[in-house]
Image (tube, rainbow, N blue to C red; front, side, top):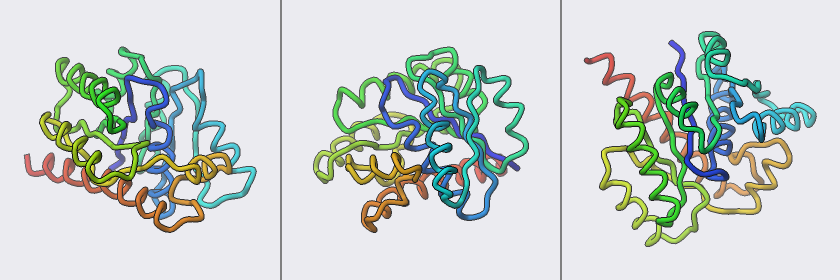
Length: 218
């Protein structure tokens, strides 16, 4: 059985593509067949990154393809163990289509209320049109390393009906350098940074597994 994971956001630069590349790499290194559908055709961040990765001959190779619409993108999904939809920001119709098609919807957010509020608003808008709150999850991305600030952000998210994933990805020039080199953020030269990113990726995997188990029981 293959899984579809949607990465969506209300704001540009929130970290969708960072998460898509992270998740794809972590699954691919463990032998899963993975593909990213790059639906942000104005930026094509994942598409350009995959080209850089292939040129640098970095393994595992990650398949990425740009698509102009969801229907065409979804036709490819059955061929893969995990199919990641990296959507456009500010695109309410496309975001809804991604959410309907996905087994798990991940919304990246920073730790300030300027980031948290639009992320929660987006989650509410999806739930209001019938997306199950159980399959909507927040990922803390581009944060500081402050425990108190991270705890405050988690407390804010935990007031909602949605999941706040374990782990976080702080702002770091090393993560940016990794992306520039065609790498994911678990492929930096710094073990502690890689471990932070790995923890968040594992939380996505664990939550997806929990959703699948709950569905089988139901």
